[in-house]
Image (cartoon, rainbow, N blue to C red; front, side, top):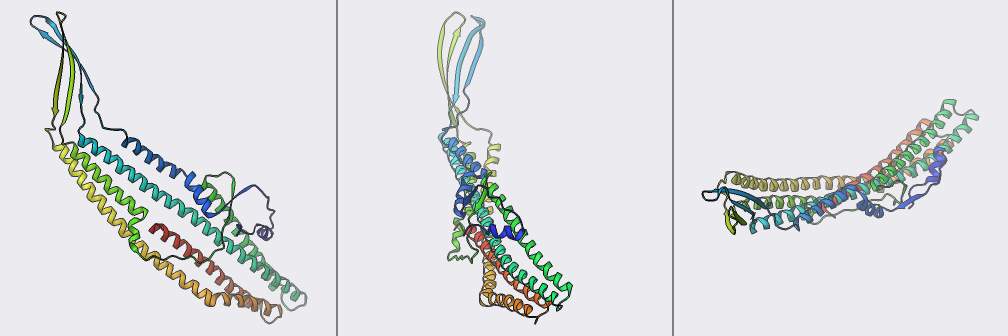
Length: 399
């Protein structure tokens, strides 16, 4: 169904519609475009790439030490021996593995964060499209009501000319017809605003022409609540635990001794040159700070685990709340199907007919039509509420 009845709305608001080049987009096309163009997705992709680069960077080598020393000699004088050389500390295998695992876990966390970002963008696009479908239904309702009130306004004018009703009643009928057109104009501006928001979300400067479906009752069922364990939020919580564990491994690796090697040359005052080399073992003797870092890393694991459990608990509570909301809307929509729809149609039909025949006062007629309008508007709001709830449920469970 093409987005909204632009020609009808232009008639209702008395405005001329200028035809401009627009981009027609279905909901799925808009989602795909948003996932490609949204800066938040680009940011998460760069974070993933950053950790890939670090993971493939290799071992963490300390800077090489270049040294030059002069030693006095009793036979060769104050500058008897000059030594020039280079010394290098070698990273331990355990430290190298710990850093690589740390970068890998951070990359996984960046990917999990991208999953959360993707979920949020999809939710935003879908909510806009469902709201547009709601406004489409609302515009169609006001179009039907406008037809009714225009006919009643003409009937009131005829009855006034015949002396059957007062001028106040005639003006009241005309005013109500004008109010309906004003309501339709308000809906038109809401539509334009949603289109602007959608265009901004997609990063487009051109006008966007959303292709929306007729607002209908959505469906959602969940047979296995363990789906919460595979949701985007759960994956992010797990990745945070893995990052904390990798940080602990890095802290532990700092206790491991490392080797060092050096090569140097000695230049004696008498012109002789002698090469030399040395091997060393670097042992962390002062471990208080290292122990503190290791203990802090262990606390970090516990904190991340607690946050993960808290996130699961929050998801379960949110799931229960949303399922309750879904059931509430389904009950309200069932009432409309069984009773409300027929009642609203009958109120509109009999109200207009009886007023035109002079069997009903305008006040009673207006009350009947407002009741019918309320039933139809509430139905649209319940449909929107149900579908927005389903969007939240699908995002929550990763479906």
